[in-house]
Image 1 (tube, rainbow, N blue to C red):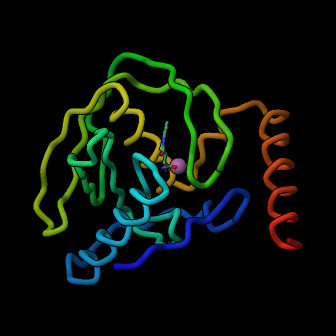
Image 2 (spheres, helix red, strand yellow):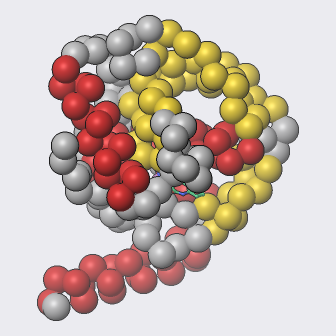
Length: 169
Ligand code: GNR
Ligand code: NI
């Protein structure tokens, strides 16, 4: 197992659009294990491959308190969505920043598992927030993109300053 480095905003690699997964092999299974280890250690409720600099359509999630409901979605696509909810989001790639984001309340997602088998998942509430947030990452999109330009600029300055301090510490 290995902990993976999580890219942080405004790293331009977070803007790369992920490509579909085509090989359901041992390397994919290992990547998924490493992503879970990294996500649980962070700690976080979801992690998109983009955040660990792998530009393939793959995400992991576990919104349970006991960390006993791991989910892997390969090549996820939203088939239906309804309702609306506002949730105060955070992101491992935008550490220490939290802001309200409006999203669908419930989604029906189709995806492959790590063996390449297609399955359907109905998600609502926090799990639906998490999957939508992770699927945004796969398109190079971050939750701060939903903020006003002024607020996003404040976030960028705050993280720039923190990155400079970390570099000279
Ligand atoms: O750990 C995370 N918590 C979270 C809280 C509210 C909305 C979305 C998230 S996802 C985030 C982990 C992360 O950055 N995934 O990309
Ligand atoms: Ni995130």
